[in-house]
Length: 435
Image (cartoon, rainbow, N blue to C red; front, side, top):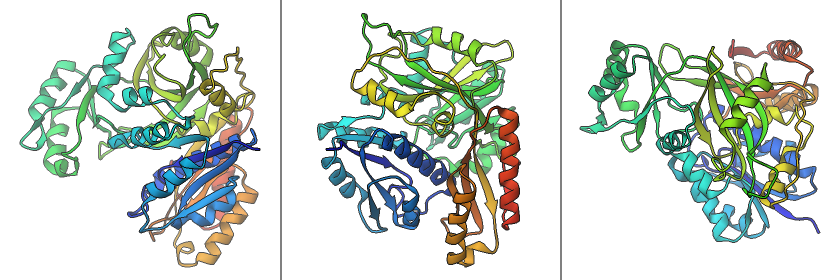
Protein backbone atom coordinates (compact mmCIF):
# COMPACT_ATOMS: atom_id res chain seq x y z
CA UNK A 1 0.00 0.00 0.00
CA UNK A 2 1.40 3.39 -1.01
CA UNK A 3 2.07 6.12 1.55
CA UNK A 4 -0.38 8.99 1.19
CA UNK A 5 1.13 12.45 0.72
CA UNK A 6 -0.80 15.74 0.57
CA UNK A 7 1.07 18.57 -1.17
CA UNK A 8 -0.45 22.03 -0.81
CA UNK A 9 0.63 25.21 -2.60
CA UNK A 10 -1.14 28.27 -1.20
CA UNK A 11 -1.45 30.54 -4.25
CA UNK A 12 -2.75 27.94 -6.73
CA UNK A 13 -4.46 25.81 -4.08
CA UNK A 14 -7.17 28.12 -2.75
CA UNK A 15 -5.42 30.80 -0.70
CA UNK A 16 -6.64 33.42 -3.17
CA UNK A 17 -9.91 31.75 -4.17
CA UNK A 18 -12.04 34.73 -3.10
CA UNK A 19 -9.85 37.46 -4.64
CA UNK A 20 -7.76 37.98 -7.77
CA UNK A 21 -4.68 35.79 -7.97
CA UNK A 22 -1.51 37.80 -8.71
CA UNK A 23 -0.39 36.15 -11.95
CA UNK A 24 3.33 36.41 -11.18
CA UNK A 25 2.89 34.72 -7.79
CA UNK A 26 0.77 31.99 -9.33
CA UNK A 27 3.42 31.37 -11.95
CA UNK A 28 6.10 30.59 -9.37
CA UNK A 29 3.74 28.77 -7.01
CA UNK A 30 2.31 26.43 -9.63
CA UNK A 31 5.82 25.81 -10.98
CA UNK A 32 7.00 24.69 -7.54
CA UNK A 33 3.87 22.57 -7.05
CA UNK A 34 4.28 20.81 -10.39
CA UNK A 35 8.01 20.23 -9.84
CA UNK A 36 7.77 18.77 -6.36
CA UNK A 37 4.76 16.58 -7.21
CA UNK A 38 6.79 15.12 -10.08
CA UNK A 39 9.76 14.44 -7.79
CA UNK A 40 7.70 12.84 -5.02
CA UNK A 41 5.89 10.71 -7.60
CA UNK A 42 9.27 9.17 -8.47
CA UNK A 43 9.29 7.86 -4.88
CA UNK A 44 5.95 6.12 -5.48
CA UNK A 45 3.74 8.16 -3.14
CA UNK A 46 -0.02 8.44 -3.59
CA UNK A 47 -0.31 12.21 -3.94
CA UNK A 48 -3.26 14.54 -3.39
CA UNK A 49 -3.46 18.30 -3.90
CA UNK A 50 -5.91 21.20 -4.33
CA UNK A 51 -6.31 23.57 -7.30
CA UNK A 52 -8.17 26.87 -7.57
CA UNK A 53 -11.23 26.66 -9.85
CA UNK A 54 -9.77 29.25 -12.26
CA UNK A 55 -6.78 27.09 -13.11
CA UNK A 56 -8.31 23.65 -12.62
CA UNK A 57 -7.91 22.96 -16.34
CA UNK A 58 -4.15 22.70 -15.60
CA UNK A 59 -4.77 19.65 -13.41
CA UNK A 60 -4.02 17.32 -16.34
CA UNK A 61 -0.41 18.55 -16.26
CA UNK A 62 0.11 17.45 -12.63
CA UNK A 63 1.17 13.90 -11.72
CA UNK A 64 -1.09 13.84 -8.66
CA UNK A 65 -3.47 10.95 -7.99
CA UNK A 66 -6.19 13.08 -6.38
CA UNK A 67 -6.82 16.73 -7.30
CA UNK A 68 -9.58 18.56 -5.45
CA UNK A 69 -11.13 21.72 -6.89
CA UNK A 70 -11.67 24.74 -4.66
CA UNK A 71 -14.44 27.12 -5.78
CA UNK A 72 -14.82 30.85 -5.17
CA UNK A 73 -17.14 30.66 -2.19
CA UNK A 74 -15.53 27.68 -0.45
CA UNK A 75 -13.40 27.86 2.67
CA UNK A 76 -10.19 26.23 1.46
CA UNK A 77 -9.21 25.35 5.05
CA UNK A 78 -12.05 22.82 5.30
CA UNK A 79 -10.82 20.93 2.24
CA UNK A 80 -7.22 21.39 3.41
CA UNK A 81 -7.94 19.80 6.80
CA UNK A 82 -9.84 16.88 5.24
CA UNK A 83 -6.88 16.04 3.00
CA UNK A 84 -4.52 16.36 5.96
CA UNK A 85 -6.62 13.83 7.88
CA UNK A 86 -6.51 11.39 4.95
CA UNK A 87 -2.71 11.58 4.58
CA UNK A 88 0.31 10.33 6.48
CA UNK A 89 2.70 12.97 5.10
CA UNK A 90 2.14 16.64 4.23
CA UNK A 91 4.28 19.14 2.34
CA UNK A 92 3.28 22.83 2.37
CA UNK A 93 4.39 25.63 0.08
CA UNK A 94 3.05 28.93 1.40
CA UNK A 95 4.14 32.50 2.18
CA UNK A 96 5.44 33.11 5.67
CA UNK A 97 3.79 36.56 5.82
CA UNK A 98 0.88 36.99 8.24
CA UNK A 99 1.95 33.64 9.79
CA UNK A 100 0.23 31.77 6.94
CA UNK A 101 2.96 29.14 6.62
CA UNK A 102 3.29 28.71 10.39
CA UNK A 103 -0.45 28.35 11.00
CA UNK A 104 -0.92 25.81 8.20
CA UNK A 105 2.09 23.81 9.38
CA UNK A 106 0.74 23.88 12.95
CA UNK A 107 -2.44 22.18 11.69
CA UNK A 108 -0.29 19.31 10.42
CA UNK A 109 1.45 18.93 13.77
CA UNK A 110 -1.86 19.11 15.67
CA UNK A 111 -3.20 16.26 13.49
CA UNK A 112 -0.05 14.24 14.30
CA UNK A 113 0.97 13.96 10.65
CA UNK A 114 4.55 13.99 9.36
CA UNK A 115 5.42 17.51 8.14
CA UNK A 116 7.92 17.20 5.28
CA UNK A 117 8.31 20.94 4.72
CA UNK A 118 10.29 23.19 7.09
CA UNK A 119 9.72 22.61 10.80
CA UNK A 120 7.83 25.05 13.06
CA UNK A 121 10.90 26.37 14.87
CA UNK A 122 12.61 27.16 11.59
CA UNK A 123 9.47 28.84 10.22
CA UNK A 124 9.12 30.99 13.32
CA UNK A 125 12.69 32.25 13.05
CA UNK A 126 12.74 32.76 9.28
CA UNK A 127 9.38 34.57 9.20
CA UNK A 128 10.74 37.49 11.24
CA UNK A 129 13.47 39.47 9.52
CA UNK A 130 14.48 41.19 12.75
CA UNK A 131 14.75 37.86 14.58
CA UNK A 132 16.78 36.56 11.65
CA UNK A 133 19.08 39.60 11.92
CA UNK A 134 19.55 38.96 15.65
CA UNK A 135 20.20 35.28 14.90
CA UNK A 136 22.92 36.19 12.40
CA UNK A 137 24.53 38.63 14.83
CA UNK A 138 24.53 36.16 17.73
CA UNK A 139 26.16 33.53 15.52
CA UNK A 140 28.75 36.03 14.17
CA UNK A 141 27.43 35.74 10.62
CA UNK A 142 28.07 38.80 8.44
CA UNK A 143 24.81 40.64 7.72
CA UNK A 144 23.80 44.24 6.88
CA UNK A 145 22.63 46.59 9.63
CA UNK A 146 18.89 46.23 10.14
CA UNK A 147 16.36 48.25 12.19
CA UNK A 148 12.65 48.07 12.94
CA UNK A 149 11.02 51.30 11.74
CA UNK A 150 8.73 52.89 14.35
CA UNK A 151 5.35 54.32 13.41
CA UNK A 152 4.45 57.96 13.95
CA UNK A 153 0.78 58.95 13.65
CA UNK A 154 -0.08 55.73 11.80
CA UNK A 155 2.72 56.24 9.27
CA UNK A 156 6.30 55.06 9.17
CA UNK A 157 8.56 57.57 10.95
CA UNK A 158 10.33 59.38 8.08
CA UNK A 159 12.63 61.23 10.49
CA UNK A 160 13.86 57.89 11.87
CA UNK A 161 14.43 56.59 8.35
CA UNK A 162 16.44 59.65 7.31
CA UNK A 163 18.44 59.60 10.55
CA UNK A 164 19.46 55.96 9.93
CA UNK A 165 20.17 56.75 6.26
CA UNK A 166 22.71 59.39 7.28
CA UNK A 167 24.20 57.12 9.92
CA UNK A 168 24.69 54.19 7.51
CA UNK A 169 26.09 56.41 4.71
CA UNK A 170 24.84 53.89 2.10
CA UNK A 171 21.65 53.41 0.09
CA UNK A 172 18.90 51.67 2.08
CA UNK A 173 16.06 49.25 1.47
CA UNK A 174 12.73 49.22 3.27
CA UNK A 175 10.62 46.05 3.35
CA UNK A 176 7.95 44.29 5.46
CA UNK A 177 9.33 42.58 8.55
CA UNK A 178 7.57 39.36 7.47
CA UNK A 179 7.82 39.90 3.72
CA UNK A 180 8.21 37.14 1.14
CA UNK A 181 10.83 37.18 -1.62
CA UNK A 182 10.91 40.50 -3.47
CA UNK A 183 7.51 41.59 -2.15
CA UNK A 184 7.30 45.32 -1.35
CA UNK A 185 11.04 45.98 -1.17
CA UNK A 186 11.84 49.67 -1.74
CA UNK A 187 15.30 51.01 -2.60
CA UNK A 188 16.48 54.58 -1.88
CA UNK A 189 19.76 56.34 -2.66
CA UNK A 190 19.17 59.79 -1.14
CA UNK A 191 17.05 61.80 1.27
CA UNK A 192 15.05 63.45 -1.53
CA UNK A 193 13.92 60.07 -2.87
CA UNK A 194 12.79 59.02 0.60
CA UNK A 195 10.75 62.16 1.23
CA UNK A 196 9.25 62.18 -2.29
CA UNK A 197 8.24 58.52 -2.04
CA UNK A 198 6.53 58.87 1.33
CA UNK A 199 4.68 62.00 0.26
CA UNK A 200 3.34 60.29 -2.86
CA UNK A 201 2.95 56.63 -1.89
CA UNK A 202 2.74 56.40 1.89
CA UNK A 203 -0.86 55.14 1.68
CA UNK A 204 0.31 52.03 -0.23
CA UNK A 205 2.20 50.83 2.86
CA UNK A 206 0.13 48.62 5.14
CA UNK A 207 -0.06 50.30 8.57
CA UNK A 208 -0.95 46.91 10.11
CA UNK A 209 2.46 45.45 9.21
CA UNK A 210 5.88 46.09 10.67
CA UNK A 211 8.67 47.30 8.38
CA UNK A 212 12.43 47.16 8.58
CA UNK A 213 15.16 49.42 7.24
CA UNK A 214 18.24 47.61 5.99
CA UNK A 215 21.63 48.78 4.84
CA UNK A 216 21.99 48.16 1.10
CA UNK A 217 24.95 46.01 0.11
CA UNK A 218 26.18 46.28 -3.49
CA UNK A 219 27.10 42.94 -5.05
CA UNK A 220 25.81 39.80 -6.75
CA UNK A 221 22.39 38.54 -5.63
CA UNK A 222 22.68 34.88 -4.66
CA UNK A 223 20.66 32.28 -2.84
CA UNK A 224 21.56 28.93 -1.37
CA UNK A 225 19.17 25.98 -1.28
CA UNK A 226 19.65 23.71 1.72
CA UNK A 227 18.23 20.75 3.59
CA UNK A 228 18.44 20.90 7.35
CA UNK A 229 19.08 17.59 9.10
CA UNK A 230 18.72 16.38 12.66
CA UNK A 231 21.72 17.67 14.61
CA UNK A 232 23.73 15.07 16.49
CA UNK A 233 27.21 15.30 18.02
CA UNK A 234 27.82 11.71 16.85
CA UNK A 235 26.89 12.33 13.22
CA UNK A 236 29.41 12.86 10.42
CA UNK A 237 27.08 15.51 8.97
CA UNK A 238 28.30 18.83 10.39
CA UNK A 239 25.95 21.31 8.65
CA UNK A 240 22.79 21.49 6.55
CA UNK A 241 23.17 19.85 3.12
CA UNK A 242 23.94 22.46 0.45
CA UNK A 243 21.96 21.50 -2.65
CA UNK A 244 22.94 24.44 -4.82
CA UNK A 245 24.18 28.01 -4.89
CA UNK A 246 22.02 30.07 -7.24
CA UNK A 247 22.22 33.41 -8.98
CA UNK A 248 19.12 35.59 -8.57
CA UNK A 249 17.68 37.94 -11.17
CA UNK A 250 16.44 40.88 -9.09
CA UNK A 251 15.55 44.32 -10.43
CA UNK A 252 15.87 46.68 -7.46
CA UNK A 253 17.07 49.99 -8.86
CA UNK A 254 14.04 51.09 -10.86
CA UNK A 255 11.99 54.26 -11.10
CA UNK A 256 9.33 53.23 -8.57
CA UNK A 257 11.94 52.03 -6.02
CA UNK A 258 10.20 48.62 -5.75
CA UNK A 259 12.02 45.37 -6.50
CA UNK A 260 11.08 42.63 -8.94
CA UNK A 261 12.24 39.00 -8.86
CA UNK A 262 12.21 36.92 -12.02
CA UNK A 263 14.26 33.81 -11.21
CA UNK A 264 17.93 33.06 -11.75
CA UNK A 265 20.32 30.33 -12.77
CA UNK A 266 22.18 27.48 -11.11
CA UNK A 267 24.89 26.55 -10.35
CA UNK A 268 26.76 29.86 -10.17
CA UNK A 269 30.24 30.52 -11.47
CA UNK A 270 32.97 29.96 -8.83
CA UNK A 271 30.48 27.95 -6.76
CA UNK A 272 33.27 26.01 -5.03
CA UNK A 273 34.83 29.17 -3.55
CA UNK A 274 31.44 30.35 -2.30
CA UNK A 275 30.70 26.86 -0.96
CA UNK A 276 33.77 26.85 1.31
CA UNK A 277 32.96 30.28 2.75
CA UNK A 278 29.31 29.36 3.18
CA UNK A 279 30.01 25.96 4.78
CA UNK A 280 32.10 27.61 7.50
CA UNK A 281 29.26 30.02 8.31
CA UNK A 282 26.47 27.45 8.65
CA UNK A 283 28.14 24.68 10.63
CA UNK A 284 26.12 23.10 13.42
CA UNK A 285 24.82 23.96 15.91
CA UNK A 286 24.13 27.36 14.27
CA UNK A 287 21.42 26.15 11.87
CA UNK A 288 20.19 23.17 13.88
CA UNK A 289 16.79 24.91 14.23
CA UNK A 290 16.00 24.01 10.61
CA UNK A 291 14.96 20.62 9.25
CA UNK A 292 13.76 20.03 5.72
CA UNK A 293 14.23 22.35 2.76
CA UNK A 294 14.97 26.06 3.31
CA UNK A 295 16.83 28.85 1.55
CA UNK A 296 19.14 31.72 2.44
CA UNK A 297 19.46 34.94 0.43
CA UNK A 298 22.99 36.28 0.12
CA UNK A 299 24.95 39.14 -1.41
CA UNK A 300 28.47 38.47 -2.64
CA UNK A 301 30.61 41.62 -2.76
CA UNK A 302 33.49 42.22 -5.16
CA UNK A 303 35.96 41.36 -2.38
CA UNK A 304 34.16 37.94 -2.19
CA UNK A 305 32.70 38.67 1.26
CA UNK A 306 29.30 37.01 1.73
CA UNK A 307 26.51 38.99 3.41
CA UNK A 308 23.58 36.95 4.74
CA UNK A 309 20.32 38.85 4.04
CA UNK A 310 17.46 36.60 5.16
CA UNK A 311 16.26 33.02 5.63
CA UNK A 312 13.37 31.58 3.60
CA UNK A 313 11.79 28.81 5.73
CA UNK A 314 10.04 27.07 2.82
CA UNK A 315 10.50 25.70 -0.65
CA UNK A 316 11.92 28.48 -2.84
CA UNK A 317 11.61 29.17 -6.55
CA UNK A 318 15.23 28.07 -7.05
CA UNK A 319 14.02 24.49 -6.52
CA UNK A 320 12.54 24.57 -10.03
CA UNK A 321 16.04 25.00 -11.44
CA UNK A 322 18.22 23.00 -9.05
CA UNK A 323 16.22 19.78 -9.57
CA UNK A 324 17.40 19.87 -13.20
CA UNK A 325 21.06 20.10 -12.28
CA UNK A 326 22.03 17.73 -9.46
CA UNK A 327 22.65 13.98 -9.33
CA UNK A 328 20.04 13.41 -6.59
CA UNK A 329 16.28 13.55 -6.36
CA UNK A 330 16.00 16.46 -3.88
CA UNK A 331 12.81 15.19 -2.28
CA UNK A 332 14.49 11.90 -1.36
CA UNK A 333 16.97 13.98 0.67
CA UNK A 334 14.11 15.99 2.19
CA UNK A 335 12.31 12.77 3.16
CA UNK A 336 15.49 11.31 4.70
CA UNK A 337 16.05 14.47 6.74
CA UNK A 338 12.56 14.23 8.20
CA UNK A 339 12.82 10.50 8.92
CA UNK A 340 16.23 11.02 10.54
CA UNK A 341 18.01 8.87 7.95
CA UNK A 342 21.63 9.98 8.13
CA UNK A 343 23.92 9.11 5.29
CA UNK A 344 26.83 10.83 3.61
CA UNK A 345 25.60 12.69 0.52
CA UNK A 346 27.76 13.81 -2.39
CA UNK A 347 26.06 16.44 -4.53
CA UNK A 348 27.29 16.59 -8.12
CA UNK A 349 26.22 19.09 -10.75
CA UNK A 350 25.40 17.28 -13.98
CA UNK A 351 23.60 20.09 -15.80
CA UNK A 352 22.88 23.80 -15.82
CA UNK A 353 19.50 25.49 -15.45
CA UNK A 354 18.23 28.97 -16.19
CA UNK A 355 14.87 29.40 -14.48
CA UNK A 356 12.78 32.49 -15.01
CA UNK A 357 9.33 34.01 -15.10
CA UNK A 358 8.47 35.66 -18.42
CA UNK A 359 5.88 38.44 -18.63
CA UNK A 360 3.91 38.54 -21.90
CA UNK A 361 1.02 40.25 -23.60
CA UNK A 362 -1.36 39.05 -26.30
CA UNK A 363 -4.44 40.84 -27.60
CA UNK A 364 -5.87 37.83 -29.41
CA UNK A 365 -5.78 34.89 -27.00
CA UNK A 366 -7.73 36.30 -24.06
CA UNK A 367 -10.92 36.57 -26.15
CA UNK A 368 -10.83 32.97 -27.37
CA UNK A 369 -10.68 30.46 -24.52
CA UNK A 370 -10.71 27.40 -26.80
CA UNK A 371 -7.80 28.72 -28.84
CA UNK A 372 -5.95 29.61 -25.63
CA UNK A 373 -6.30 26.19 -23.95
CA UNK A 374 -5.45 24.41 -27.19
CA UNK A 375 -2.35 26.54 -27.53
CA UNK A 376 -1.24 25.64 -23.98
CA UNK A 377 -1.39 21.93 -24.80
CA UNK A 378 0.65 22.53 -27.94
CA UNK A 379 3.23 24.65 -26.11
CA UNK A 380 3.76 22.15 -23.31
CA UNK A 381 4.37 19.36 -25.83
CA UNK A 382 6.76 21.43 -27.90
CA UNK A 383 8.55 23.20 -25.03
CA UNK A 384 9.31 20.81 -22.15
CA UNK A 385 10.95 23.71 -20.29
CA UNK A 386 7.53 25.16 -19.38
CA UNK A 387 6.78 24.45 -15.73
CA UNK A 388 3.96 26.99 -15.84
CA UNK A 389 2.51 27.70 -19.29
CA UNK A 390 1.52 31.25 -20.34
CA UNK A 391 -1.57 32.13 -18.34
CA UNK A 392 -3.76 35.16 -17.70
CA UNK A 393 -5.95 35.03 -14.62
CA UNK A 394 -7.63 38.41 -14.36
CA UNK A 395 -9.32 38.92 -17.77
CA UNK A 396 -6.50 41.00 -19.17
CA UNK A 397 -4.07 40.64 -22.07
CA UNK A 398 -1.20 40.23 -19.60
CA UNK A 399 0.23 36.70 -19.36
CA UNK A 400 2.94 35.12 -17.22
CA UNK A 401 4.79 31.85 -17.63
CA UNK A 402 7.76 30.12 -15.99
CA UNK A 403 10.48 28.07 -17.66
CA UNK A 404 13.48 26.07 -16.47
CA UNK A 405 16.17 24.92 -18.90
CA UNK A 406 18.34 21.83 -18.61
CA UNK A 407 21.55 22.30 -20.57
CA UNK A 408 25.31 21.89 -20.25
CA UNK A 409 26.19 25.53 -19.40
CA UNK A 410 24.97 29.13 -19.14
CA UNK A 411 25.63 29.92 -22.80
CA UNK A 412 23.53 27.01 -24.06
CA UNK A 413 20.73 27.88 -21.61
CA UNK A 414 20.67 31.46 -22.88
CA UNK A 415 20.52 30.15 -26.43
CA UNK A 416 17.60 27.88 -25.52
CA UNK A 417 15.85 30.76 -23.72
CA UNK A 418 16.12 32.83 -26.89
CA UNK A 419 14.62 30.00 -28.94
CA UNK A 420 11.68 29.73 -26.51
CA UNK A 421 10.96 33.47 -26.60
CA UNK A 422 11.13 33.42 -30.39
CA UNK A 423 8.55 30.60 -30.43
CA UNK A 424 6.29 32.65 -28.16
CA UNK A 425 6.65 35.68 -30.41
CA UNK A 426 5.68 33.65 -33.48
CA UNK A 427 2.52 32.56 -31.68
CA UNK A 428 1.42 36.16 -31.12
CA UNK A 429 2.93 36.96 -27.73
CA UNK A 430 4.93 40.09 -27.02
CA UNK A 431 7.75 39.68 -24.47
CA UNK A 432 7.48 42.35 -21.75
CA UNK A 433 9.96 41.20 -19.08
CA UNK A 434 12.72 40.35 -18.54
CA UNK A 435 14.29 42.09 -21.52
